Structures are given as structure tokens and as C-alpha cells.
Length: 121
Image 1: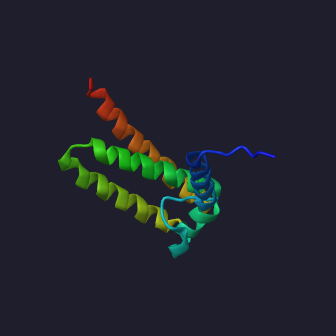
Image 2: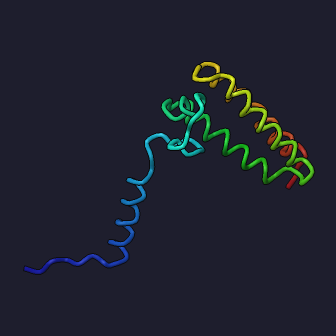
């Protein structure tokens, strides 16, 4: 009986994709939850909604950081530090952390809209 052989590239691709699926944590905050010590960080790590907001915030921050003028990056970084300090005051209170993320996402979106309004690109 002859067996059909799959090309090596197909097997390699399947192995890599399978490995990638198993290496993705169920909850993926933008920081390493294994080293989370603060109450707000731990709350983000165990709450899927907060984790999603954290990833969204980190993504918007990174994108905006690439788009703002060089002289504005320091301001953006300072705003991010202020956000993290504010989030830390929430401790493990989920509603407070959610509010902090909602406010920060609104700020970051406003920054992106301001850049978009200056177009065309």
C-alpha cells in the first residue's frame, strides 16, 4: 500500500503554526504577567476584559509614538507614566482600572485623530 507523502514545507508550516498556538497565553496583557507584583497589574492579568483594554492601550500608544513629532514623544511618554501611576492607585478595583483604561484610550484616540486631521498623507 502506497502512502501519500506531504511535502516537507507543509509539515514544517503545520509544526510551526501548532507551536505558535500553544505558546500564546490565554490572557495576554502587554506586560509579563509572570512578574506582575502590583495589585493593578495582577488584576489586569486575571481579568480578560482588562487584559484586552491593556493590549489596546499599548497598541495605540505604540502606534501614536511612531506618528508624533520627535519633540512630542517625551510628552507622550510622560502621559503614559501618569496613566500607569493613576492605574496603580486603583489597586485591584476592576471598575477603577477599567475607567483608567477608557480615559487613556480616549486620549490616545484623540492624539491619532489630531494627526489624521492634519493630513493628507
